[in-house]
Image (cartoon, rainbow, N blue to C red; front, top):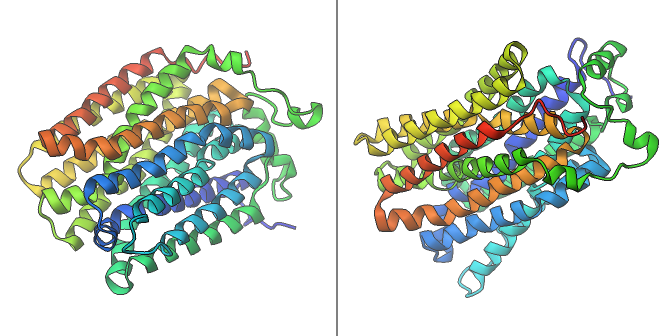
Length: 429
C-alpha cells in the first residue's frame, strides 16, 4: 500500500518527481559539455569532432521521439519512463569504459551518445501523457512549467557539481555519479507512479473528483474499449502541428547553444577561468528554472482570464521576441560579466515559452498528446543537433556574434509560428 504525505495531492508529488527526472535527464546529457575539455584532451578531439558527439545524442533523441510517443500512449508513462531512465544510466556508464588512443574512439563516442539519446527520447512524451491523464486543464501550464524547470535545475547544477567532481576525481567519476543518480531516480518513479489516477491507492476521492472535472477527455476509455487507434490523418491535418514543429525547431536551436557551447564560450572566447566559467554557466540554467515556472503559472492565469490562445500562444510569441533582443545585446557587450548575465536573461526569456509548447499539445491532442508532443519535440531536437555543429562552424568563419545573431533570427521565426496555433480547437472535437 503506497502512503502519501497528508495534504499533498498525489498528482503534485508525481509532477515534482517528473521535475527530478527532467533534471537527471539534463545532467546525463550536458555532463559531456562540462567534461568536454578533459574528454577532448584524452581522446584527441577538436571542437568540430566534439560537435559531432553532441549531435549524435540529439539525432538519437530526435529519431526515437515518435516511437517513444507511441510507446507512452500504448504502455503508459510508468513502464516507459522507468525502463528509459535505467537505459540512460547504462549508456552514461558506458562512456567511462571507452578506450583511449585508438582510431575508433570517436566513432564509439558517437555511437554511445546516440544510444543515450534514443533512451532519453521517452522522457517528455511520457511526461506529456501523464499530464493528459492526471492534470486538469487549468493546471497544465504550471505542471509543465514545473516539469521543464527540471531542465534548468539539472543543467544549472551540472557545471559546479561536475566540475568539483572532475577536479577532485576525474571526469569518469562524474559520469559514474550521473549514472547512479539516474538509476535511483528511476526506481523511485516505478514505486510511486501509476498511469491513471484511478489506479493509484493514494489518490483520495476528493482529488479524483478534482482531476476528472478538469480533464478534456477520459483517459480510461482506451482500457474500457481496447486501445483506440491513433488518428494519424487528423494529427497531420492540423496546420498548427507544422507551426509548432517549426517553432520548436527554433527553440531547440537556441536552447542547445546554451547546453552545448555556453560553458566553452565563456572559457575560450570570453577568457574566463574554469571555475568561474562553471559559475557563469549556471546562470542561464537558473534563469531557465525560474522563468519556466513563471511562464507556466502566467500561462494558466492568462488562459483563465483571456482564453487558451492568449494564455498559451501570445505569451510564447512575446517571450521569443524578448529572447532575440537579449541574444543580440549579450553577444555584443565587451564585458564578460555582462555578456554572461544578459545572455542568461535570453535563456530565461526562451524558457518562458517552454510550458506553452507542451500544454498546447495536451489541449489540442488529448489522449494522443504523447504522439503529438513527440513530433513537436522531434523537430526541436533536430534544431539542437543543427546548432551543435553549426554554431562552432559559424563562429570559426564569421565570429561568435554572428552565431548568436543566427540564434536570435531563429527566435523571431519561432515567435511568428505561434500566430497560427489554435489550442482552443481540440483534435477530439
